[in-house]
Amino acid sequence: MARFCSSQCYGISKRGKPPHNLAMKTGPKPRATLAGNDVPCAACGATVYVEPNQRGRKKYCSKACLYAGRKPGGLFQKGHVDLVPPESRGHSPATRQKMVAAHRASPRRGPENPNWRGGCGRTERKIAMATREYREWRVSVFARDNHTCTFCHRRGGELHADHIKPWALYPEIRYSEDNGRTLCVPCHRSTPTWGGASRRSLQKG
Image (cartoon, rainbow, N blue to C red; front, side, top):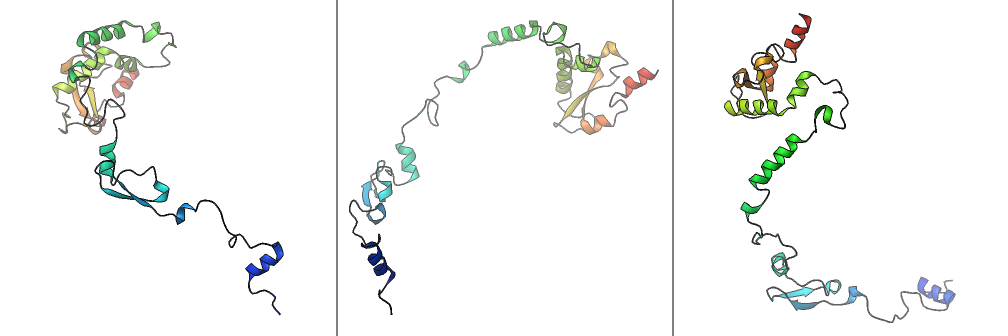
C-alpha cells in the first residue's frame, strides 16, 4: 500500500524539508520573470521596448539610429573631410628622384652585395634580365605595340618581349627597340627560338 501521494512528499519525508522546487525562495526574482520597460530612443526619441537583460545597453530603435548616434572614433571616417589634401600626399618629385639615384648607386646587386655567392649558376640572360637597361627595353617594346600581341592582335594578359633576332646570336642589337616585338605566351611558344633553341644551336655549332 502506497504511503505517499507523490515523489515530492516522499522526498520531504526523507530530507525533512520540501524539495528545492517547493521551498520558498528569497532575494530578487530571476530576470526571466521580470518585465521589460519602454525607453525613448537616444537618436530619434521613438519608444523602444527594452528586455530585462538589455537594460543599460539598448538605447536605439534601429541600426540607422545606432549609426547616427555614434561618436566619431577616428580621424579618417566616411564623410569626414580629408586632413591631408591629395596633392600633398606621398613624396615630392624631387624626393623621388633622390630615392631613385640612391637606389641606383647602392651596391645591391652583383659582387658588391654582401650576400653575393658567385652567381649561383645564373645564366648571362638571367643576369641581364635583372638590369635596368633590359627592363627599360622591355617597357619601350610594350609601349610601342600598345601591349598587343603582334601575332594574334590580342591586347593585355601575360605578355613577353621577344627578340626578333635571337639574343644569343646578335648581342650588338639586344637592346634595340626595332629588334623587339610583343607576343602573348601561346604565340611566343610557337616561335622557333622559344626555350633557348638559338642558344643550344650556338653551343652545338
